[in-house]
Image (cartoon, rainbow over all chains, first blue to last red; front, side, top):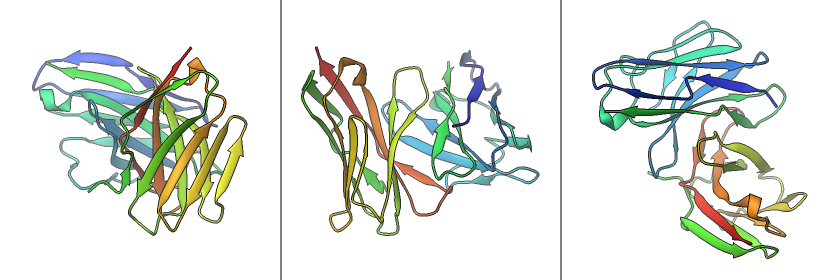
Length: 114
Length: 112
């Protein structure tokens, strides 16, 4: 399976600021995704990060709030913009490794917005 | 609209006994199912999967059963070990590599 790292692992941010989360994979992958896990809830897909084109957002998520970049097949960033306390969550990137149907997850970024 | 449901938020089992975690889904188009294990402050770790052409898949102490007619799957852990204590998520997908729908998780505690 792919080895996935995320930076930062956690952060505490002030309301109204933005945070960019990085996801790095040790091999080229076709599919990369960004998820959110709010306290006590399941994992919710934010968007699919597409290499070389705009991300595909799920219902309830918009590019202005969660801009995503994917400049190549091993790296992606998710920005949480104009944060509010409701954005406090764990943000996870995941990939589908070549030749499998399984998603593998990064370690997550725990975000607290004050 | 929760398409994948785990109705038991928590489960406690004695070490050495069997742990059974349940998952129900509503979308008959789902054809691939996975279980993930998550420790606090870590990302989910893939555990075991099953495709809809099978009704059982086994990997060591972990077995997943799929009942398509009932839209139900379960994860059996035998024997349970204290290190199995974690939150377990089931997930389902209708297309290879596309969106996965996750349940809300079941917190398993294995008592030594």
